[in-house]
Image (cartoon, rainbow, N blue to C red):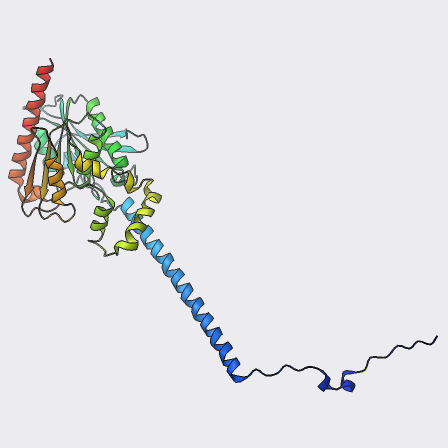
Length: 353
């Protein structure tokens, strides 16, 4: 059998016409493809810009939440000895929760001849947000001197967000109430039988939160009372930078727990406003307070049933500047309240004996 295998022919011999050739695209189709490519590029560019804007918005609101948790507070610039010439002690103790540490100054009372003497009456100052135990615009040193002259021990301390040595985030009163409670307990440990908490702004709101969980406070003076809530904090924030309520408020609310470990839902704002406390409470507030509604202060004052509870709504008074506006009247009114509280406590003690 004779088999023969054919030899492949060169391409040239076959002819180029035998190979299929790509046909050129019609002009309208080439134009359509180019338009589609440009469209895809624009979509990708816009998507990238939207993503970058979204990330920027998240970062910005995260920074705002961080600033609320860790506000700038000026360092201490003096002390009771330098400022008003009275002896004091540096004190440090754990908060009632054990999660933070409290530091402050304890100013013991003196007798009429100027010598130190134990006193069973102590005022614990509760400073406002963004300030420390000095809070010069109140002013804390002048009030300390007043109380010192009235034979009260005075305890001034820093909340965690104001502390230099024991920094902790601001929690809207959750942990601050534990720090204030520890301060009250410290005053008890130093022999105080009668304790008055004198609070300012958020420190006044914290005092009310603390009084919900303890009977160790005998009376309170609440100056420029601020009850923290998401709406109140947002309104205050808008005084510095205008933000849309949506999405800013929900974003900030959702991010605050990342820095503080707590959310606004854990702050008993409604309970604080509606609660009738057993102790005497003196609410002092200004009608021109741009940070805390005087209507809220009036509502809290109206809800009190103790016969010594009262309010002083200062016409045209501004936030925490009420002492500055009427120093003589402020001192007279608060000193009278303290003396009435002191007399009532003494009478109750006699009845119990």
